[in-house]
Image (cartoon, rainbow over the protein chains, first blue to last red):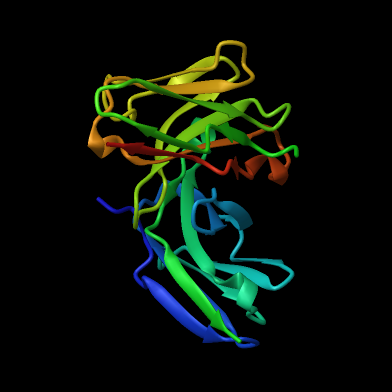
Length: 114
Length: 117
């Protein structure tokens, strides 16, 4: 049972353009969502997060949008840079004592071409 | 470096041997988590600690897996009688509980690669 899904295994974008990575979830108990970036042979690096009480959170070039009714979130990167090329994981957590037990999607490989 | 530290970074072992991984969380982080990641998949939650107390271990993959955090600081993950299917990256993460939103951020270490031959 895949509770967090990233349906696009890969995404290719030109430098300077917008990258949009998508994530869907099924568990309505999830109330906190995070995006991580990962390079091969390294651990995930935190990018940005959003609580279910918000529908948007912005940090520099990164914006995360949450649509609770659709159980969908997306990460926008503007403008995209070659250094953004990596695997991006969406993760979700329920609140309370369960917080921190993250459920991850399968990841999307982002390639930004110069 | 004040991030989450894991060692060894790489371990190659023969099937049937025991292996132990160590994680040093960020200072003052009271929650510590262990995850496993296999190729092509996202990390999978295994277990976590609040200080020295192991609050959940039902997701540990089998009774060959065990974890400790004896003094509430560093933690170890041991795999006994390793099998080839145990080959994966083992990730440690930590956070500090609190009311601020920054307490919701979970920081990962660089992981420990295990190859069982």
